[in-house]
Length: 303
Length: 303
Image 1 (cartoon, rainbow over the protein chains, first blue to last red):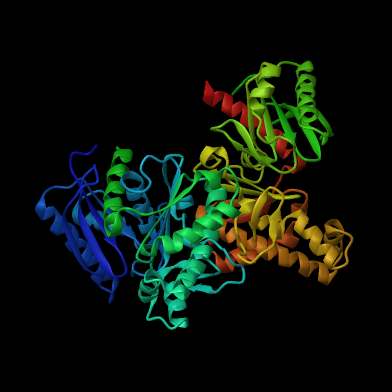
Image 2 (image 1 turned 120 degrees about the vertical axis):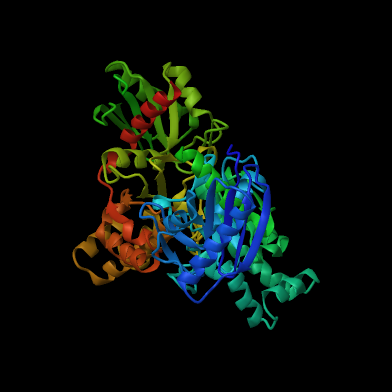
């Protein structure tokens, strides 16, 4: 275990959250600021300022950065990014040069999965899947006891599994259709809520919690589609736990109950009997904690 | 490398094929017989006779057995089997006791993938996916340079990814619906062929090869659904190669051309640019060769 903490940064489309992350996952010296949207340079300047700010509190061993993008770890480039102006750059190299610290960049879904696996809903498991339901759907995989990122480190895009060949387009950087993200993300819930006359997905969830049957059924419908995606996950990975986090994931049992029913009735044995479908435990800090832990682990592997 | 060969056995629903498989994948002393369907004991007796027959030709280091079933490698049991009467038994233990040889049982999709990875369409790759289109759809995954079987060794069931939430049931041991197997297997093609008035899937493929536009379009439709399944595979695994084998897979470019178009237009970067979608190379012997190679590798790992 590294005696020094890592600087963990969760650089999302809305805000940049950061902190010093110790090897045991404890966090100090946190910082949060809005994500600059005007230019790539402003975004990079903000990241540099966040790193410098943390280093004023004391030394760090490495920088870990979670971004809402696919990373090609072979080409050392950010590939395909939706919510942050990062495409095409060697982000790790950029921060490394300016901070003098070893820097590791990873997909935000992956770092959240690592945090939940080490400290949250996936503790003690060997095969663990994390789904983060937000603007999109992020995914993270722990397979055979270690994080799995796909070829070139650019995979594990569980939000972009096809669940409906006749489904709606994802939009943005994804040219696919009928993906889990297009049907069960917070954005999909927002659209469904407004179709039904609710003032957005938060209002839909609040109405369902208050017992509104139409709202309960609307969320159950989304939960069942989420469950179909989980059937694919169970049949391919046979995980011990699937954890669901993210802002829309806070709808909790309103989604997870119907999803669980689909998995129980439609997935194969033995996976359907092995898997537990549970809420994520770490909340909004999962991203920065996971980014810090990934940096410390990657540093140890490099040594 | 083991100086002795392994006995490789591909125990399918129709026939049991076996041979002595050397560490370089070369095969000798082959045998093929129909699969007894009447009872589990008859099936086990046939496997035992196949092993004894191979041992008459010379010594072997191990037995490898590929079966059309999910194996729970933790509970040492065959779990969920459709085309062979094997459910619930410790097949490896049974053969090991009777042959005196270390015995390794694996899913038929996995062993075919190992063979194609070592000797066929996946040679030299680090991330490789095999789909076998037959009565069902078998799958096999090579991830980060080694075979991946899912938690409990019971996963990688790529034929049971959901691609259509409103799709038809799989039937048999699978209670799911809209799985790739229900829409793009040889059985699905058979059904589609008869709906269109062709005398089965072979006649459909033959008509398409002869230029029959309706037959070409029917196969293209199946190929596009296959392509949707491949979009999930590319977005999750970013493989270098997806190889397609099996009896119905011999339709070749009639399926692969349309599948490739879907992947190119709907999968994410960089996976869509990295992946090559190709026919499997080893043909019907892939199963027994892969079973032998898995046995030799597992023996080396155990030592």
